[in-house]
Every structure is written in C-alpha cells, then in structure tokens.
Length: 596
Image (cartoon, rainbow, N blue to C red; front, side):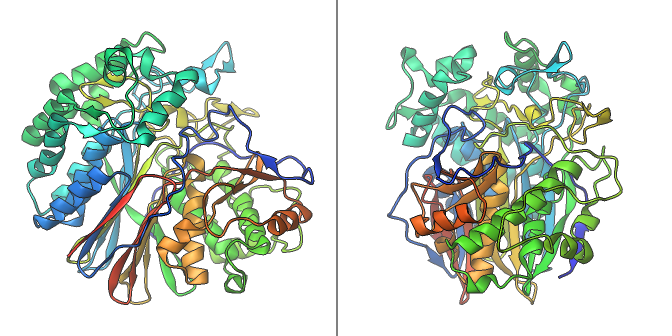
C-alpha cells in the first residue's frame, strides 16, 4: 500500500462519535427525535431499479429532472464538467432541501487523456467577522437546533464559483447553456416529489426553518398550505437569478443586487442575525487541490483532501482493513460488519482529533495514511471482540478532538462520465435539511457554519475545528474515484448522509473491491454505521438484510446493536467489460440515464 498526496490540503468536518454504550444483549430500535440522527426521513425502498449500461456516456443524480438535464447537456456535446454543473444548478430547483447555489461542494474530476485527477474545493467559508465564540452564550455552547435557523449559521456560498472555475478549465459548452435548462424548468414548473413533500412536513415540528422566513413560507406554503407530492411548482425568482448568472457569470451572484439581497437577508434575520458581508462574497475563491490517493489491493482509490475529512477517513478505513481476507467474508456477515465497525472507530478517533482546515491547522495527512501508522493501528483490530477503548494515535500536532457537532444529512451526490471518458464525482450540500431556512431570490442559504465546533477550546487547548474568520468548516463529504492498475477510471461513487457519508462510501468501495459486487449490487446491500448510539444496522432497505443470527453474533462480539433506517443516497458509475454501468440508491429518488 502506498500513499499519494496529490494536491494536498485538508480539513475535516462535523460530529465526534464517542464510544458506544455497553451492549444490552438485545438490538434496539433507532432513537426517535434526534435532529442530528436522520435529518431527512427515508423515502422508502425502491425495488424497480435496473442498472443502466452505456458504451458512451452516463449521468446519475438524485432527481429525475436533474439527470434529464445532465443527459441533454451530454447529447449537445457537453463535457462531464458541463453536465455536472448543469445538474448541480438544477438540483437547486428540484431538490432544494439538500443542495443548491446557496451552498457549497467538493468535486473530483478525471481527465481521460492525461489520466489525472483534480480535487476542487467549493466549501463555504466563515465570514471575516466570525468569532470562535459566536455559537456560545454566557460561556456555554448553545444547542445545535437553536443556532441552525437564521443568519448566524450562513457561510459564504462556494458552489457557483467552483463550478465556474472547473468549467473554465474543462467545459465544452458556453456557460450560459448550462443555466438554460433550469431556467426553462423554473419558468414552466416541476413536479414536487414525495421526498421533498415529506421533508417539508417532517421539519414542521422540529426547528421549522421554512415557516420562520417570509420568503420560504411564501414559496413552500403557497396559500398557507404545504407543497404536496404531485404539485407543480414554478420558481420565477430562481429563473431570473440564473438568467443573470448566465449573462454575467458567477459575478452576478457574488456582487451586485443578488449579493446585496443575500447580505441583507443574513444580517437582517429576525432569528440569529448573521455576519456575512459583501466583502465576504466578493472575496470568495475556490481552491484547486491535489487528490488524496492510496493503493488498495491493486486499485488506486482517490478522495478529496481537507477541508473535508471524507477522503482521509475513507482511505484510513480501507488501509486498516487491507491485511484481512475480506474476500472470504460475505457482505452482511457478522465478521465483516465487526471488522468494518472497529476500523471506523479507529479512523474516526483520528478524524476528530486531527482534521480541520489545513490553512489554519497543521493536519498530519501523510502520517495518518502512512504504511507504518496504518499497520500499527490495524494491529489493534481484534476479530474476536470489540475494542473497549479507542484513542486517536499519537502524532505531532497541536490539534485536539472537537466536541460533537450534529451534521445534516441533506446533501446530494452526482456522478457523470462523458463520451471521451472524462468524469466528475461531486458532493454538494446546504448542510441540514433546508439549510438556514433563509430564502433569497429563489434559493435557500446554507447553515454550514454549524459544521464548526461550537466550543473553541477543550481542556484549555484550542479545538482544531473551531470557528475562525475565513476558515472552512470540516466536512464528511467523500466524492471518490477508483483507477485500475493502468490508471484508467473504473469506479465513481459518493453519497449524502451527514457524518455517515464516510461509512456509506467506504462500505460500497469494500463491497466492490473485496467482494466483486457490481456498484448497483453494492449500493443495494444493507448499510451499517458505527455511531455514538452503537452499531446501527439498516432495518428497512438493503438486500441481503441483517439476519437474526448476524445480530446475535455482533452482540456476542461486544456491539450494542441499533436497528433502524440508514438514509444514504449513494450514486455510482462503474466500468465493467468496457461499458459504463450505473448504481442508484434504492433509498432515494435518484435516476441514471445512459447516453449512447
């Protein structure tokens, strides 16, 4: 195993997962009412998904209309970058609870001619006026549900700037043509999906972000009634915003009237007025970084470096497990689930201790992914029992582990391969469901600043992921690409799901690379996640499911087993026998479209 830090920089993201409580001897239902557990309810389990195949190009996104738009861009001669940008903009309209131009993204792009991967960081930044104690009151951190709604949680959006930068390098169609399909759809209207309608209702009895802002209330509750599945909803304000962006580029968003409207809404929020300024918007710059790669069983697995913790932690999990003969263990086995959960616990301890924005914190990425370090950590894994105590490794750095911060699961992931073999794997988010709840000119603003630790110090030492001016909060987003021994692309994958993104992505990679599953088979396998509640096993979706014998075996190994929904949104594309094959998560509403 070797480590290649292709463009290094790093930072991590949200909540810490302390050791689970001692096992009870019986599986438990997932606790209800925890806003940070599953912020967006599961859609249900689809059984009609058939993997698409194409010798040409392919798109997969979280919404049928977004996928349709991406396919249209490819048919018009667009590149993978063009299609990804057009789909990301479309999701602003049709999946507003999860992502949009009011948020940010991490993106990996693959150049088929050079076989090079670039990592693009469009993560939001804290305003220049941000302070380490801005989420505290009288020396005590404020509860997460209290600080999410309103302007204080809004970071400088990065999505449009990063899309514009990637398009300038690898786009084939004019920028304006990427906006046109969503402008048309916003003018004509789109059909509200069951997932979107369910999310509106779910949050009415939680933080109720949509009814706290007049613009959100008017849009999502026309005539005083919540949008329902099957309703046709237009968005003329977004159409006008995108028309300006089509004419003037991203400058139309970051300067001028739209920027003024954003700042006025954030600073003038009736709840938690924020600190975002016109200068913050004007100065925002995406960062091009080198991908973070590691060799795993003959494959080169590449993720995004900090400020997301996703790439580092996914690769750590793989590195910790490489010495085991996982091919001999069936997906869904107690032995495989046990080793996975233990590797996650070890990798997570390091994540929470060391990962943050590399521009502000010395993050030891090379050390975390080095062969000697992973070998030493892996030696702690015991196939016969659960580790009672898990500590981070000892590395030279001033970082300390961050207090737990809830992380929204309402992100989105898309993948695309064009006819030339160029590809994009991108995860985008506004953080929690409906972000901050602030509606401006047809889109929602993020609440990404709550991905920072709300407590700036721990034990008298500064927390790595504390709020600082212009800093990028830690993330779990994990867009991933896998190359074969010849350097050719063989797999793209990623997922929404808050802090569970890392585990969802790592599980699929292991199922494909260790067990030879197709990406569609791997995505449909049951999810599992090690969290502070215990070892969560998916109860209502995934084939094969977790058997009673498996649960009993895991309890015997020392795990406190929790049964419930694990709401991933995994999307992938895999090269099999020279053709591209899709992977769509049955837990959400995603669609794959093959383009001849």
